[in-house]
Image (cartoon, rainbow, N blue to C red; front, side):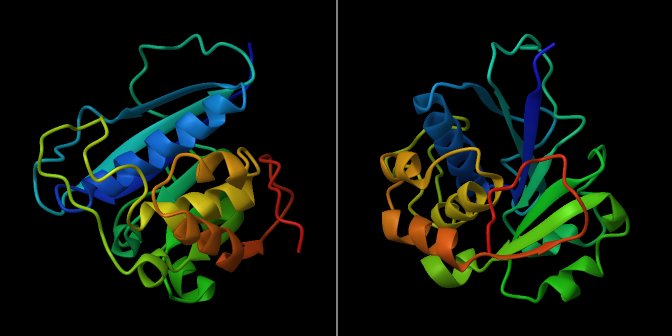
Length: 212
C-alpha cells in the first residue's frame, strides 16, 4: 500500500473556520498542481457553526492514488497544524501521531513555552512556530455558509497565508512557488516561509526540508 501522509489542521468555529478551510484547500491545490494525489476535507463530527468551538480539517497526500476515500478522519497525523494557539491547552492535539511527527503552531510565543502544554511531546520529531497573526494582521471571516468551499474573499487572504508558507518550508511537501499561484496574500505566505522557527528533537519520519 502506498504511503499516505496525513495532515490535521485545528482551528475554531465561525470566525476562524475559513482560515482552516483556506489552509487545507490551498495546500491541497498546490500539491495537486505538482502531480501528487491529495484529499482535503472537514471533520464532519465538528460543529463549525458554533463560535470558538474547536474544529478539525484534514489533508491526505500520496504519490499514488489514495484508496481510503470514505474514512473521514486522520487517525495518525504525520503533521498537526494549530491555527489558534490556545487550542493546545487541554486538548490532545497529537493524538495518534506516529513517532517523529511535526507540530506547527501559529504563535509569537517561544517554542519552550508552547511545549509546556503538550503532555505527549515525546512523540515529536520537530516543532515549528510562526507568528501568522503578526504577519497578516487580520483574520478572514466567511458567514456565507459555504463550508468546505471557497468564498469571495479568496484563498489565503488572512493568517492562512503565513501558515501555508511555514508548512511549505518545513515539510517540503509543496513548493512555495506553487502556493504563490493560489494564495491571495503572496507576501504573507513568503514571510511565513522565511520567518518560521523550528526545533528538532530526533530523526523524524517526515523528511522535513528545513536546512538551516
